[in-house]
Image (cartoon, rainbow, N blue to C red; front, side, top):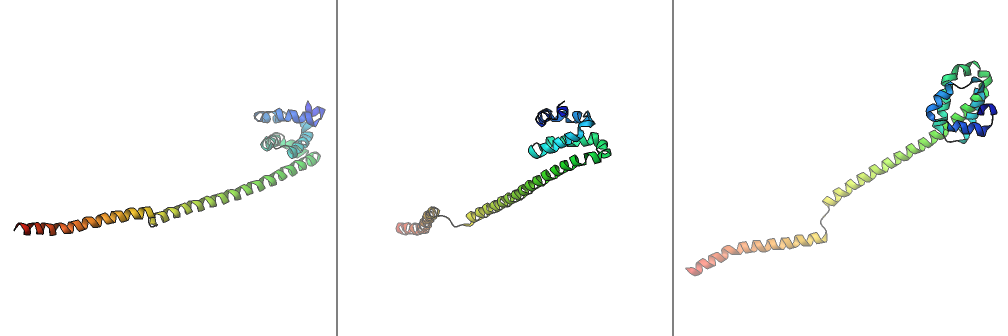
Length: 169
């Protein structure tokens, strides 16, 4: 009915209110008489609305169910189909540019993360190989002094035992 009135605002409202699951059924039952105007409308919407998947579903089902009609009436529909093709190509170019940018950005982040992981691994290896800190050195020195004192006592012990034995004799 909205196509009969040929008012874009009403057609747009009806177009957007149809659920994506019902698009195939609507396209199958779509009257061929209104296809030319509807293709023009989809081209118009394609430029102004960001609902790419929704619009591509309409185009897919229209071409699936009415492909023969488009082929036999190609001269009458050529302008509408070229506008639609132009809009699809423009969206493709825009989307492919965004995808390429995202791809390069993801590659950049991947390289940075690999670099950071390698840097952390190197830091861990360096920390294991690094000499001890001042507080650790002091503890090691204290341990070393205690060990030296124990060694001296052990060395002096036999001398003391000899002195004690010699004093007893």
